[in-house]
Length: 446
Image (tube, rainbow, N blue to C red; front, top):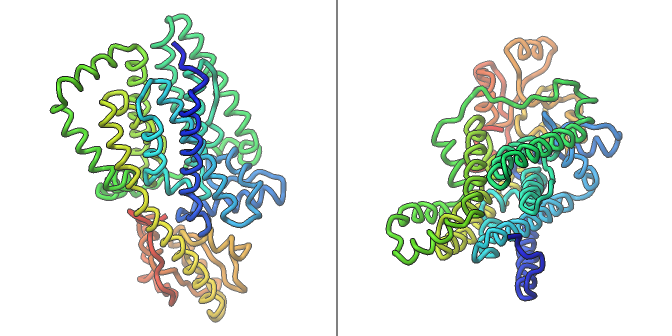
């Protein structure tokens, strides 16, 4: 049976009010730069280049063409403008999750979706110029379209969105007869590849076949950092404690709650939803563990985990978890805003300090480089040049042979050591006399 397309008036008003409220929670935080992740500044640099030249430029490979072109429309404006567009996508993701939960006849759908919207990794990435949340909104749109027997795609925003297609094929296989499922999967796969190919035409024209690559950090972070990025940074401590309590309490559910759960499990739609969400959660978890550089990689996991829990547990359990998540985002968001303000001050301090250096200097800037390039319009301040990192000892010696003095931003020397095993201070580079900026949670260099 297809979920009704027309909701009762009270539910429509509740959803409208909740959507406005979710969007409003983003507004106090969208003014401080483009986010604490340097990739946000890379997106804006690429978007401004696209807007100015009309030619595609990737913020980082393999490219995120849909979002980069979208950001080109607002990149010349103040930061709050492009951040607000991300906030609109987060409100859309909230609405779509409500619709998905209602399709599966989940109680307290608005409350659960509100908990999703305030989960730290969602909340933080809803107030910056990053592609995680826009891609998630498109993925949820694709999921709801699938449930309504339609197709929609999100791969052009983030290429990993295509992984959801595997779980979608499982859903089709469970829902349809084998022959119809194979036909539907072939249609889904072919249209996905076609639309993705069209989205990535500008990337291919600019970079050729080399575009299909990604940054692969040879330095795997320690497991305590992986843990922080996978759990506390995603769910927050109230949410994480609620998830742990949910798992520990499961064996002690009352017989009435267990019987209610058995009734739901007898529904075909519930079983198929568990299989769909479960497979997607596993796939995105494996992708994260392959390259656990950002908590944002787990953004797609959040609505899928909540859907899984809502399908497998009594409503009061899902509602309690949602309340904990409603409380989880505020502390991390305040901390992230402080980091963003510190980054703005640090960028100005570094530029001012470099302007006073004698001679011609090479300044190893690491994650500050995109911010500096955006502030200056280039990677130079007079005779001085800012570089991301020194690639090898030969490059370092080349800089010295050309008469450059080498400096580094405090903190970047650790990242240089991790990335290229070069010890800048031991080689004679000098730290800039500027205060260290606040760092993002579980950051080990960008």
